[in-house]
Image 1 (cartoon, rainbow, N blue to C red):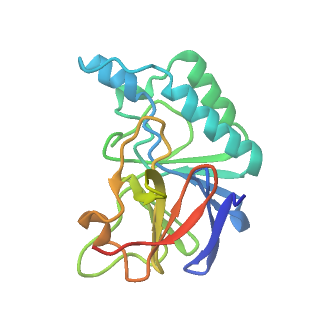
Image 2 (image 1 turned 30 degrees about the horizontal axis):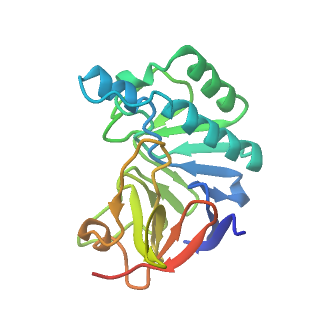
Length: 225
């Protein structure tokens, strides 16, 4: 069973892991995107549907498992880590759990569109972050100038949707080409944008690949519309 698909980006050797995290072993750096902690609380607070309030625990448990497996020295969260600024006020047990995971390692929070400002959580808070050949953003750069070489971003929650042996299959996925990676959402309560949606297809160069997450990492060519 494949736990990861390895690839090169701007000279950095990276691993797109089945769990939905990006691992840079040379730098002992783990990257994760779109945790959306507190989504069920935010929806209930605004008078929406009452979802089972377990997504914070499930998301933290899966992240904790990745930390235990890889023992990173640094973690970078690519924005929308909290479903809104009020949701950053986590329940005490979850806040202590997060503090324990952060202890003893560098932890960088990138601002997202759901959490676009400082929150009362430790670590470093950045609009973006450059480390060696890689540039970490919440939303991929777009426009005629093209992407930043070595760009890693989130925001879009890409999902692969296909039919396998007559059964519909939908999985969060990485999108990867020679210049950028778009990360899958890691949070338990997150929807997704189909991998052939114009917003994503317009970002990715010909020959781009998708790495599907789930029980194992599966690498497929990115379909073109």
